[in-house]
Length: 191
Image (tube, helix red, strand yellow):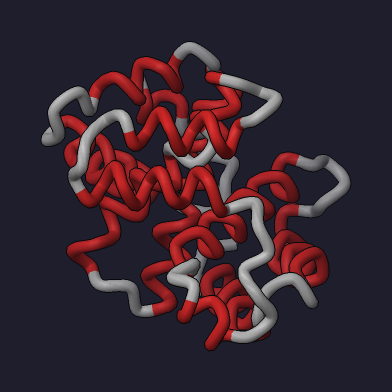
């Protein structure tokens, strides 16, 4: 059902997107109670579609940034679950997602997912050193993917203009190195 929810209209080729989603699902299913968050997400079809896009784009950004291959499925999973708190408590999504994900267990996957769910909306700092010192790289990549998804969904943003619009939206909010990453990532995708 998750792969069926992927649309062919995104910037990532469907075959590549399917590989990312399959790796994320495999990682979740390897965890005790890993099916539970997938079931929760499937209750809201639109949020599921947006979360899948965010997961795929986060992995694309991470690959370009040189993220270790063996950690991409975990990062994609954290990206997929980034907004699970909005399903649980729309008034306090960051806290609700953080607590709910922590309740899943102490596996590093749940801990990273909880931190991302709590922090992706926050300002990570203006320099790469601040982002690195705060351990916020995963949350920043997810935030970039969330913003890209919003722009891609907006009919006023032409398909080829997502990267420049994303950089304009994030300029001054994220270190320049992340903005350069956006251009590199989108340049590597088919048009």
